[in-house]
Length: 241
Image 1 (cartoon, rainbow, N blue to C red):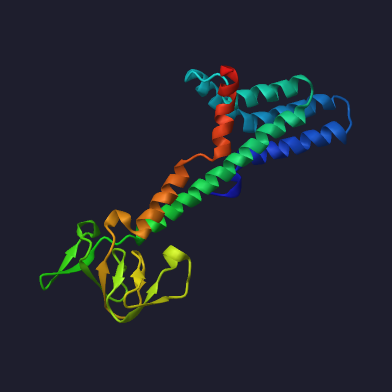
Image 2: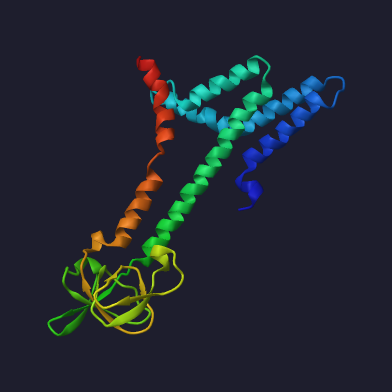
């Protein structure tokens, strides 16, 4: 999707707003007030229609004083007193903020996807003299997992092998492989670089560092920021006073 297609509402509004300001303040001709009023109206509709749709939906859900409804009323008031540019600017800046929020959510979802891809589906576990291929959720704390070169560590554990090199970029962001010695902790999702290693499992499938990071990212993408929660609840709080 191109830039114009992705941000067409803000682009159209910005162009129309710039044209309206030029016609109102710099380009003087007979009937110019009708031209800049049309341009202000076009600029407002381009970014304000989605806000009014949200305001109407909030009214249907029984929420009278939502931030969308109050913003709509404020911009209509600005138009009523002749402050057209200010009325449009409120809607335009709100739309730009929405674009930024959607971009952050999209980035968080990509991070979640990358973390999910780092979770191994199979763990090679030594039990009763045999090597079993199990899903990591079926592995018990205290089991010994065998991780071959190029494979991902299935669960957090303590390295039994003398020493090995692991790629932990997905977890720590460090591109340089990390050397881990016997008795030190190895995290799930790390990639074994060179020799086959044995790891004593110390954490369950849902308690690994990788699982905790994944849960935090998912929760952060769902949770509203404190300021956003305050803005949403503030009009209802005033109404209840």
